[in-house]
Amino acid sequence: MHPDAQTLANIRAARTYHERPPESYLVPYRHIAHLLECRTSESPEKTFLIAYDADGTRTEYSYAHFNALVNRAANLLWSLGIRPNDRVATLAYNHAETVILYFACWKLGATVAPQNVAEDDARIAFILRNSEAVVLFARHDYLERAMRILGSAEGGAPNIRRVVQMGGAPQGDTLHFGTELEKQSEHFSAPEAVSLESEALLVYTSGTTGAPKGVVLTQYNLLVDARGISDWQGITGNQRLMCVLPIHHVNGIVVTLVTPLYVGGSVVLNRQFQSQTFWQRIAAEKVHIVSVVPTLLQFCCEYADAQQAQGKSIWGENVRRDDLEHFRHLICGAGTLSVALAKRFEDQFNFPILHGYGLSETTCYSCFLPIDLSWQEHQAWLQAHGYPSIGCPISPNEMAIFDASGNGVQLGEGERGEICIRGHNVMKYYYQRPEANAETFKFGWFRSGDEGFFLRDERGRHFFFITGRIKELINRGGVKFSPFDIEEVLLSIQGVKVGLAIAFENDYYGEEVGAYVVPEEGAKLSEEQILAACRAKLTFEKSPKVVVFGTEVPVTATGKYQRLKLRDLFSAWRSVQFRPQG
Image (cartoon, helix red, strand yellow):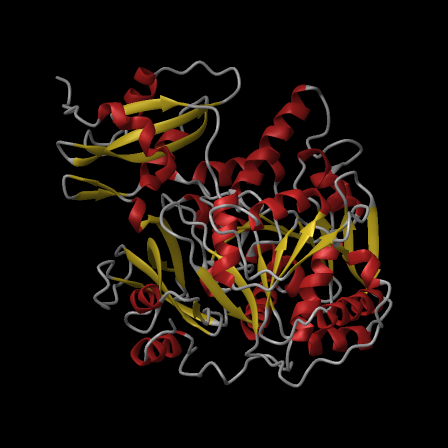
């Protein structure tokens, strides 16, 4: 099930950066454990992790304390028979114990296979089986669910040898993480088998169709991407990042756990995002940077509007703008950021959005807007080109636009095609998916499946833009439209909170254009209003023909809209031929 020789050669080419092969490392550390030991030796009493529980309970860990707990956890794993290259699964959420377990696995040379608790049981069972994990660590809240998944009639996951409970009071004869941790030594030496090539993460893509694909990332992948992120943004050891995104995903793991460690900084870990505590914690903890997805920007704006309507501070209770003087910017990626939302947020809060782009397959981020742009230049790249720019490539990788057919032809400035990436942060491969590997690395670059283009600035830098998923492009009678183009128009209509362009099946054109709209609270919108507003700015062919109103939008764990899940809502119009009026 491993890639064939030609695919392995293509993968090696895709993991080469400016002719520098993947084994010519760009980081000075032997592995993640070496980095953690270095930081602990340099600044043992410095704060590394501040963790907030769901009820707001705050716990702080110095580098020395955190490293000691990681060592205890590594010894526990060893006592459970976990060895280098074994897979360890988690069914958990943002918690200090989850972070400790991750680093213990990496110190031991084991691979973390984190599960997204928002997935259904059947999907989690498939991932557990496919990952070949041998132990499952489950939070006490999910322990009953874990047992149900493992014992399901559909096959469960017989490869899981043991379940370990995390948090809560010990239940029955299930091994309890906290209890067992106290029995372990605070000293642990990484086995010689651990290296930068040791697999660190096995994360599964959240596609809407087909079986999820397991992305294999090495310890080097995590470290080199963390280096690229910190170098690009000027993140140093005296800065603090905040995590509000789930740490079962690469964004939460790489940006706000590994990157602060890489520079010797600190991280504030939240159980989850909450509008009412977001700015409060940034102010109280003197956070410099926070990583978000567009959905969270929307929540911030809505919360600010509600606060303002009541004559209160848009930042939350007892928070003023002066309390945020240390805050630098927000990193934003993963989901679809519209021009309208970018403008609304920056106008309302006057903090820059450092828009970026990346995938699990490229570890995390591959590009960002530069931090050296003037405010006017920054806003122009976000607002003046129809799409917010995702910026320029960071140091571990290159980016280019290729013909979307997969023929390996590279395109020029302004031409739309497939965004492709090559560099040291490209994954090792998809686990047990030889066909997917062969297609994805077809011509020695990683093919993202995203459509985009680039424009040059006066310094010759390539600023990239994403215009949609190639599989989500609307193919109407052989003419392809980007949903993002249509959605910018939908979002410009007063009263529209979310507007998505949906490709639905149609007997006459193969696919037609539909609009799924979530109105703002109290807004009174009609289908006729929305269709008329779209046709005033778009051709008939490109305009939505039908509007479906709703209250919720299916999203992935990182806030990406799942348009394909909305197609069935338009099935009643499959046999309708839409014609322009007049």
